[in-house]
Length: 385
Image (cartoon, rainbow, N blue to C red; front, side, top):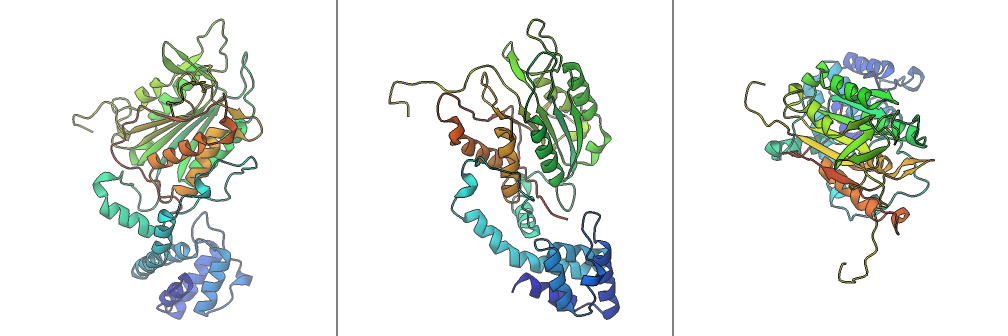
């Protein structure tokens, strides 16, 4: 049975006056982010015609929108029945996708890569089955739909004494799009000093929204280096002769730990950083062919930090398309977050970057997972209403 048949069968149980209410929902937009169907395109009381119109207007989301419209009408039993029927139809498709041979989705990004038009949505059936079967191994969402939380995005582009970070504007645009598509509200800052970065992260840790969230993201883009074997983000006033304008990456963990941010205890805190970690190219020449709340809690837990390069290595960026690191993050999250947890997403990013032809010789770029204390699997469940 296809989606159209499933939707039509459920709408058959609506009385005529209830169907008019359903159509009214479509005329006016079922949710704040759903484009209404123009009245001129939907002037019918025939259930099949209504479904056809919905599928044309919302080719990928017709079923989810129908479920939400029924809930808005307090037709909760019908909404639940439709949701279960849709899960039965959609589940084989997602299982097939998960078990399919790894092909183009694990290949390097092409030179003409552009951000995906939309993020691939997770199915309610996949989420329901996963949370039922692996309840104790998965970070549970606080919302009945997708993830809910705040994200901090800091992008240093223009420096007083260092080079302009060409392409960084594209990274900012792409990451803001991705975070919002995943359901996070985004707080943005541009061109900050080291002290200002510290204040921004500290203030972000105090946001009351964390109390009702289930996770958070911190994304930082800037020039970077290592001092005393510690990773540092360079502020916009940094200069080599007087290298004081810096922010140490480890301070992110301090500001968001259980002591300073109790609202995020037991909640995933994802840190994404694009910054150089030194001046090495990343490749070496090897001659030997044989080298082919009120309780005792962990002070720091539920973090994962994904950095754009290995220690001491440059973080390369394309001045026209943005950084390779964030391009891969946007591409992999958009196409695979609907079915894989975040650690598997990071693995897939690393795999694709490892074979990227841009880094065949001396220049090598491989992202690095640092200081990770996730104790469960973190799924993002994108696209669920």
